[in-house]
Image (cartoon, rainbow, N blue to C red; front, side):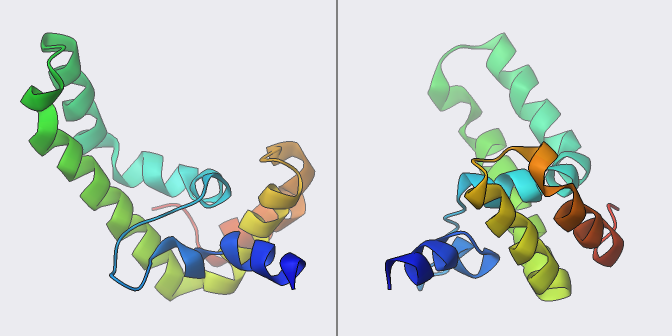
Amino acid sequence: TRGERARERATMASTIDEGEELVPTSNVLYAAHKHIGERCKDVSTSFLKCKKKDLDPSVCLNEGKAVLGCLGTVLKDLRSSCLSEVDSYSQCLDRYSNDLRKCRKEESVFDSACPKP
């Protein structure tokens, strides 16, 4: 049904397509933001420094690929270590248009099951 398809799109299971390409939805990114921020801080900083030095998008392609690679690693790790908790949290965020305040209970369960590194 339509509701089941929407719930499936809101889960971590849907972040990797059949071709192993990363396709995360905004609610999954919101749910994982603490992990992404902590684990991808260095590559993100390098990317931002590169962008600040040169506005030509082609100059920073390698740094951008490093950020996407880090993001993919974080999401795959979360899928393997605490899938049900991150799914519950991301589904709540999807239901409430990414309003973090309305999903504190799910966030707490996720944080307990999968603490930030």
